[in-house]
Image (cartoon, rainbow, N blue to C red; front, side, top):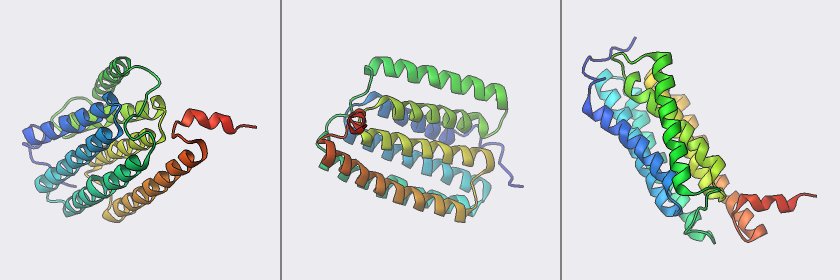
Length: 223
């Protein structure tokens, strides 16, 4: 059983990093520019790695420190690099047009955050635990990421929503169980890196076939 110091739930470091994690995901939802969204995802990953590192220092769990290092290398460096290269090659590198206006989308995201915090607190309570700051944030980012995936036309924006969703799941694992076994985390990160690379190739194939990465145009392939 991992001992959690009493100061950890009240730590300004954990709370500020959790806030940065949430705000960076909301920034993605507020942006049309693909490169700005990739940068926001990068900062989201940095905040995630720092949260994991803080928990590792507080609990003495070395595998969480290794996981934080892997997050920095894979999520904060390698994946953003791949996404930027795809965005720069894309014919629609400047814009990630949503199905609805940005103000409407942000109102929906705000409602999702309120629902996530209220329902998570009702299920798990608001006691002095790391859950009180990290778990509601992870649920909120999960909902925001799913909204990004279904509300954007560009395939690359949907990929960004997918990797944000994976970040939220990783934070939930840290909050609930103080991290998965290191071998599992390494496997997940490797699968994610390969998956993003394949999705980048898929985006390129969509543009070669349709002249655009707007996924709504895939309907033209029917029949």
